[in-house]
Image 1 (cartoon, rainbow, N blue to C red):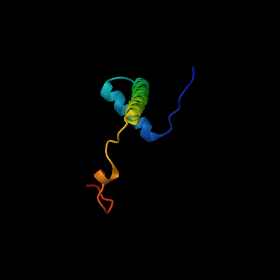
Image 2 (cartoon, rainbow, N blue to C red):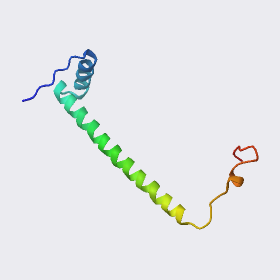
Image 3 (tube, helix red, strand yellow):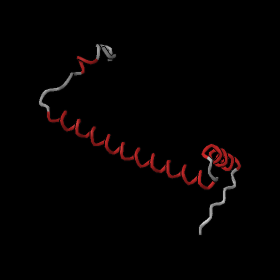
Image 4 (spheres, rainbow, N blue to C red):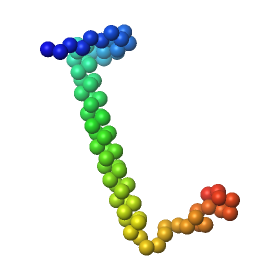
Length: 83
């Protein structure tokens, strides 16, 4: 079996604190925390991929419109500042 040797006192302290709060071992706390972090990361990546696709859809729909939504003259004044 592979081992993980934690030499950082802060990591050890955090693992013990989480273990105490969850009434488990330090190994259990680290295992659960890593699983939770990996799941959040997976969901974040899926969310970003979904967001990118939604932005591309909006871009394609916008590009397909024959008329402009707004011109620079409508958005900015003669000094280039937003109206």
